[in-house]
Length: 315
View 1 (cartoon, rainbow, N blue to C red):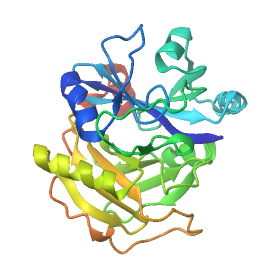
View 2 (view 1 turned 30 degrees about the vertical axis):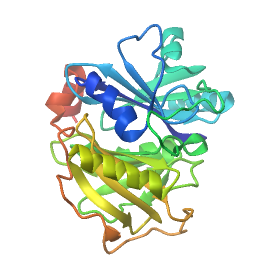
View 3 (view 1 turned 90 degrees about the vertical axis):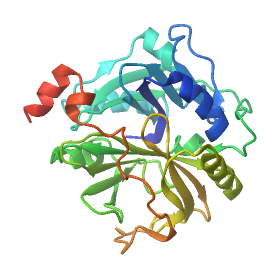
């Protein structure tokens, strides 16, 4: 499948007002205009797209959906046919959902773990329209998607790898350098970074572990780092550089309980051509100063709807 990367993420939250301050003042997001059909939700922009994040009022803080961007209409239609050929249940989005997402077409499906995904094409945008919520050099998105996502899986279904590699056409990048069972995947059209999505095994647990966002300079990383410290926001890891990526980053906890990794490229990433097996997570820094799994990671009973939970328990 010709997928660019993650185009947008949607969350349910009990903390809309906290996000409304945190998004622009800490991260530098622009508050976007909410669709007429969804006035109570909060939409954030990180570039010229209509939005990259949506926070919908809910009874719990959790990931609601992951939106994958197909390259265009033809690629989108080919993806529909491929899912249908492989017997994967999909639900086509109606005009109301397309309007809410700001796209020309969208369909929904679930992965073998139970996470809700969407695939879309033709998201609205306007050139040179992004205005950060505070002085900020800007985010790197566009042809690479908004960034990356790491989620926890309570089980390790054997069909997970086939779902991403054989069905969706993703590249398996390896398990990374972290402890435990993990899997990193990047989309077919992603030649800019090591992964779009990763799954980490946490027995009996699920939820978002962190979201990674790229910014344009080390100064943007440093200024965000200072704001986080000045506000006393808990961190997961200090500033450092991972062994598998030539990037500098740090992790702090968002109002949603998951970590945000603010990243800048020290040099362009390139495909190594082989599966890496780093001996340690980072070449310098990244001191662990908080929990690796924040309060966004909970039990399936807390995060899944009853019908989906029953299906999960059946296998």
